[in-house]
Length: 126
Image (cartoon, rainbow, N blue to C red; front, side, top):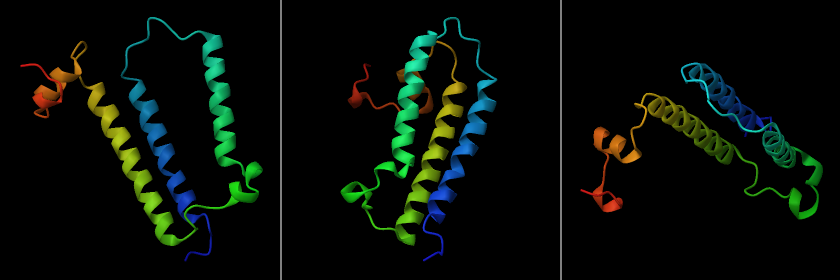
């Protein structure tokens, strides 16, 4: 076991800035929006996100049964979590790059047909 209990967590945390950098860089390719979200709606959303992040990443409620870990801290669990995180970030980058290149107005079914992944049994009509 590594000497730092949170080694894998910190390592997995490095994957998200990679996605953030890609997301910001790819946003430069998008067209300007014609209608923006209202300031009040955005503020409410940010308030909920801030509260959620605080609850998830803060040990303020880490007492009693809320403080117990499931599963226990181990290198195998940490490495598995790290691998899942990297796969998730890679999937997010793939999805963003793939769907940014689609032509405007192309439907999801059209895209699936064009890429050869269309399965008529999943609700397609033809």
